[in-house]
Length: 420
Ligand code: UD1
Image (cartoon, rainbow, N blue to C red; front, side):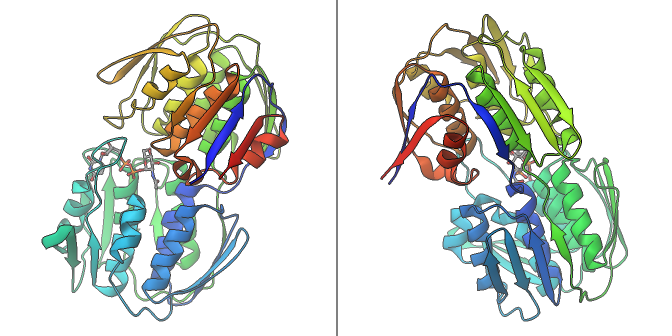
């Protein structure tokens, strides 16, 4: 079990190169299952969730090879359609493999994903869509789920909510379905566009990603040799920029897509940071010593302010000069980390889906526990801005989304170390 020890008070300054996006590489890895050949992925982040996904692919019969940020998946010989329970439990987003395995094997057995710290995370929209396409869904005993389909057929699907995972699952399942599948009210996240790019390289006829309507023309077997570079992680970029803002620092992030982080930068500007965009994916941020509050910020699906940045921005606002209100509209239970921020002296009250943050002059170091990925990132940010030492446990959650976070932050002047 490791802990992070953060000594606050240092201004962040320097350059951080942003790695590939976790939420893009996971569905693209699932999509490699559609290929009766070898796919090569570049710019993959080195994260535990990526390793878990590779273990799942191996259990299904794929041959996988990883060399730093380059991953090779040969899915020409699938031998199983069972996602081992221990791997599915380790990573809730393993559910995005459902559509691809179903498309390729005609059946899939997976354990039902449980709730987590940020909400119930149901998969009703995923399952309803697959049923509409002709799949049979059986909830077996012991929390297992069996989905079978001798042949899927294309159809029109209207999502009640633009769910990222459901959109991805339907895109993958539709690949070998008979006829056209149309997804309406599809999620518009950049990760969906990246999945479409990869699917196009496989030869799939798919259009519309990035808009609310996606069309997939089902086809026959795929045998391709795609090479695909994963898009940069907009949440990792946003997190480090938020950390710089919280410390009154000046930071350069390189290798980003400006548009993908537009809503995050807009928000950082509103609280007093100066942000500049340069060609070649470089963004700079200069923060004043004390930030302004935000009268109202609501999370929403892309291109709105991402829920995955909500804890980090609340952490930044906890030391701003005034009162801010942040409303969480995507996940129902995403404020639990605020109890930990309060241990550092933050003045935050939560009323339903809104957090009211009264900015304090100083945070003080304390012992805190990360209980989910982005809540953990929020604790690091608060620790960097606090006086004295903060000890963060539950680091395993943080490692799921940030590669060697202490090394990255130390290089830009943070005092942070990992102790076993
Ligand atoms: C993805 C991201 C996650 C991000 C989230 C929202 C990955 C691996 N994870 O998660 O980091 O926080 O998008 O941007 O890409 N819902 C239902 N029924 C369903 C599916 C979803 O009610 O069948 C609800 C969820 O409980 C949640 C909302 O819809 O309240 C959005 O969830 P969704 O977009 O599906 O998130 P994920 O794909 O799980």
